[in-house]
Image 1 (spheres, one colour):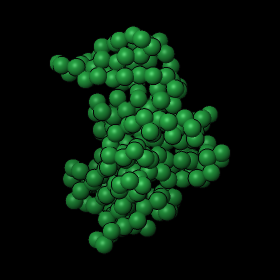
Image 2 (cartoon, rainbow, N blue to C red):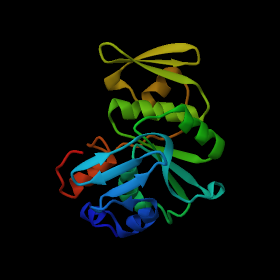
Image 3 (cartoon, rainbow, N blue to C red):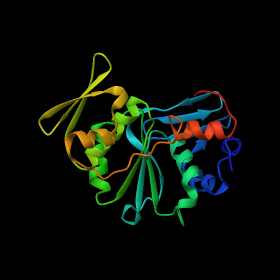
Length: 212
């Protein structure tokens, strides 16, 4: 049990699940290792690294993985499982991954090389970067090339299968893209109602009003 997670009202069983996948600094702030950097969480800050690797939590025998949750951060993974823990009879065959602040080709290659045939869920924020990450990762998992460009006047241009599609940023989502192009990735992108992220929802439910 960690006092910060307890203050956030994280279920003891959820804390137990993630306890092997973080360390702490000299002030007891949480450190989640990505191999080439750390996600650093304390009540005064939350820093997520730009990384070429994944932070991961869960079973490391990938042949036994039943479901993979790809999240915007380690704290988002903790928050999502805390919200959905009762939906699982056991979390022992779950795998949580976070690419950090950016989705790169190295992440997509790793997924295609190590986790083919798995069931995926995407857990990124409601902001436009989170919605773009949904598309990039879904396309990478299905090995379908896609390119996304930010255009003037808050537009997005997406190049997919040699065609170019324009979307208003406010209207863009993985589901909206699928409807527009007539292609289904069959990978759900979960968003909490009324909040940008599950971490924001966790903080609000715990009565913490700080913005990190």
